[in-house]
Length: 178
Image (cartoon, rainbow, N blue to C red; front, side, top):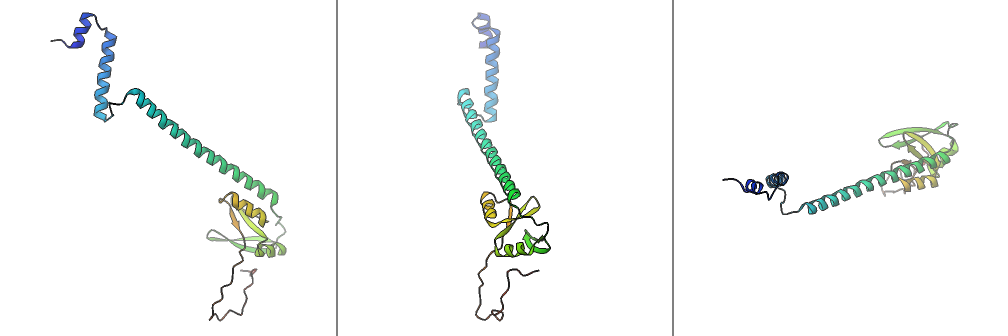
């Protein structure tokens, strides 16, 4: 007994090309069933779903790229601000110690700059391992733009005096040298 496909070919109702296409479609459907693909979904629906998923991935990649470009632009602005507003500390003889992460760093500044640093009028900016002294207003603008830059500033700490503190009468100066 010949298959229906063979009978159609003999009768001339189908040609060899149509027979191959039908055979290929039948194999593809069997493979999709084995792999668990929903066979009720048409090719157009599947293409539409894949196109939407690709559009979503593209949107996400574009958003990530835009965020990286914005961060890079802000960092360039910060570098420009530091370069244009940094104070000259090459004549510094007085050491000023500050904390960078877990390390204590030393920067040589003038006596006047050291006093202004301890009062909070100047701040230290750490960018790419290089430290610069800039006015506090510039440091504030840099801090608003990015958090990838180290900004070291003196803070006016309110002195909490305990009632039974034996050293309450002794004042600790802000510009104490280490």
